[in-house]
Picture 1: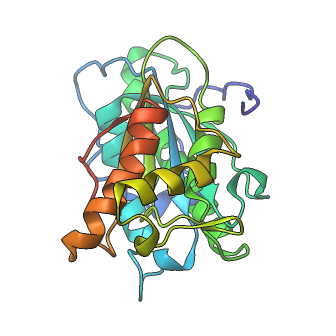
Picture 2: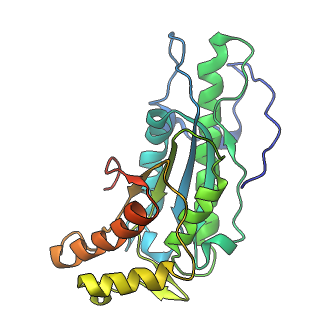
Length: 253
């Protein structure tokens, strides 16, 4: 589990934002400030970021564009109180990429300051997510999707309530020990064998209290039903039946 850091000191609503946050105006325009008292936020959240070549803007599903399009709506809709970050790399759990968790509900000096303080915290979370993605993209090529999800699950604080996980990836598992090939999952028997080959030595993350939101899922297969359906069945077995996650389509495309 990610180590807890000291809670930041309260900031006044008109304090200057860091330079990196100032460049996020377009992203955070939808956040705004409201005259109403902000609703409580307490959901532990995490984002998993695919740094493999398939996420490139030219030939892939454009991981950065999908991150920028979804992370702020995700944080708002899920009521995220904290945000953790995990990479998808050649070996995700062993990756050197590390980014500190962000407290999305830091203390404010008064109730009038809450919305502005939270907006600044969300800006920090966007910068942190971009930093994690950039690091993942600069490491050795590979795509250990399951390891990235497992690392995120371990980073989310434990508790009895729900957690929310945003996974920005096409879910093309391709690490030194396992390569997801559409030809090897074409039949139910073949899929069962492939699932066991992947999860047998590693296990599955504990996601029974987690709502999981994929972004970019199966994009390279969506034009071919004969490929997409086995691909979807493969991941459904792992994520829903074995890891017990609740998978949602809100940001899947």
